[in-house]
Amino acid sequence: MSDHPLNYTAYLIDLDGTVYLGKQALPTVRETLQKLRKLGKRLLFLTNDASRRREKIAAKLLNMGIEVAPQEILNPSYIAIHYLYQHFPGAPVFVIGEGDLADELSQAGLQLCDDPARIRVVLVSTDHRFNYRKLKIAFDAIRHGAAFLATNADRTYPGQNGEEMPDTGAIIAAIEACTAHPLDVLLGKPATTMAELALEILALPAAECLLIGDNPETDIRMGHRAKIPTALVRSGIAANLNPLSESDSPNYVFSQLGDIFKT
Amino acid sequence: MSDHPLNYTAYLIDLDGTVYLGKQALPTVRETLQKLRKLGKRLLFLTNDASRRREKIAAKLLNMGIEVAPQEILNPSYIAIHYLYQHFPGAPVFVIGEGDLADELSQAGLQLCDDPARIRVVLVSTDHRFNYRKLKIAFDAIRHGAAFLATNADRTYPGQNGEEMPDTGAIIAAIEACTAHPLDVLLGKPATTMAELALEILALPAAECLLIGDNPETDIRMGHRAKIPTALVRSGIAANLNPLSESDSPNYVFSQLGDIFKT
Image (cartoon, rainbow over all chains, first blue to last red; front, top):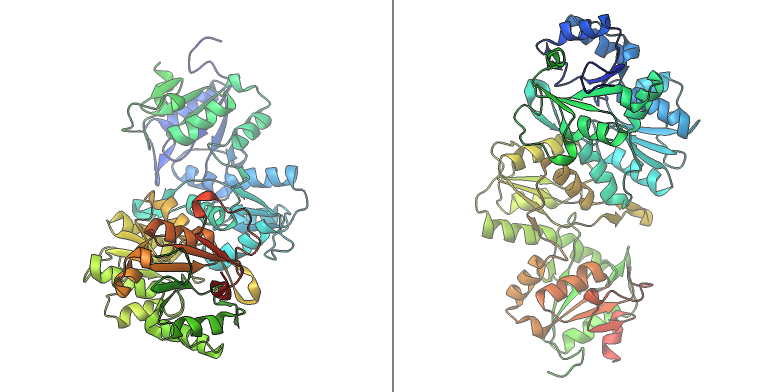
């Protein structure tokens, strides 16, 4: 396989900062995805956003004129459901999270629970309704032996109007501090759980996929860890990041997604 | 001054685990304090409990038959008021805390505020009503340049029925994680702020005081840092702690407070 960004079988593509920014599709994205599909390339879209179910993300993309099937999207709730079925079958789960996360888990047949004596897994995510009651339940459950998982570990996320908001990293830190128990499993980027599931779904070896994202610390780092070749797009968080740290340096750098056809 | 625990001018005595446990006075405490007073010794009582004002702590002690004036008690709200007047005169303060803390600050004439653009100091303490809204205000204020203070940094505290509860350490960790800004000033033990104020009130050099407490990591460590001689009582948290780490080893070890007269 020659060293050209079009010589891959599948593309794992980050959403926020790579495909869209806020409610706007980024330039060249729509036509690039269409061209890749025409070439018979397989596509999966990866996001750390735990508050929206896959159908809603697909609908948001469609609003921007980008056709993506919900099954082509890997979001933290999907990863969590898969991981919990595989590693903690039947285990009662306490969810600290917002939006669709708890609903999705529950609809997938997982048992949600807020009784610390019964909880076997504490799953933490973005939650702007986080409070002391939830902290205490997580604290008691983890001290009773529950596993401590998180969908992502971001310090902040961009809220409405682009305002920065405290994110899951703050909740993880609070629980780690009082329990003196470090997080057991991180499901989202830059952990490899999401990448491994993507490869499993595609039934492809890492070397046949190209991971494209805008964040060196999550997207590119996950690619390195999972031995998946990487391309950084400078359309999101890494627009002005220069130079990149060596450990997070990608195989390709594009100013935007469409550059994949210009190399 | 000979090396005898009765050869000090003043005694700085921890409360929980040294003077009482829960609602019970510990053995020999009452008569020991009376004997020390008869010898003309000066007494100050130090606690990291930020939820009760000094008058209530004095009333609790009186219920156990122990007479202590509110002015002999140094608690975090007293320390905070003193510190804020000294270092941040007139600055609007956002308080994350419970019980009497905010009331005491407000009655002492400090300006409480929850507008992130105006807040100059974020003061964190034990708060079982901690929630995302408070986290967000602290986050915005600290990113606008407010100083980040805490009354204590304990990971947990003993709640009713002796049940362990997440404490200020968890709230500090959450704020540090999302702001990427470490705590600026710790007011309570083992920081020396409380010890320095005690020496200022007594107008005595450190060498003329003996600090007596049950917790190597807070009481004894603060004594070391402030160069105050220390005595560990094995009536509270350190009952079964053996051996002590070298950095937290005290000048004297007593099984209970009364042993001060047996050496």
